[in-house]
Image 1 (cartoon, rainbow, N blue to C red):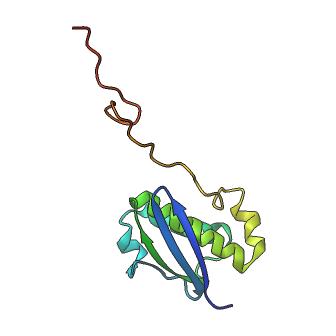
Image 2 (cartoon, helix red, strand yellow; image 1 turned 45 degrees about the vertical axis):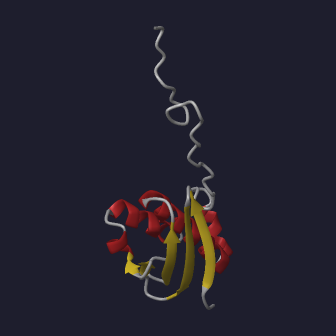
Length: 128
């Protein structure tokens, strides 16, 4: 097996994920994952597919991600890693699918409507 390339998306974030056999190093935009994502929760989200498939430390991951914020980027990377693991070994799907890691979360920000303050919020009504 050489390099497996998959794409993950969440909100407006797009992550191109490259998975290869290695020692478990995760690089995001040429930085270490722990440096790029400052909180432990975000780093845990990246490692979640490896924990569920019991492959921690077996694959190196290189990621190019852009758009969105921290959470969207972390979840886009998680989806890309999950898809790559399923292509490497189809048996990993049995562990990843029930946890919801193979589902593309389609929720997006609703657009602002004209004549309103935000997407749903209205301007204050006055009887005067």
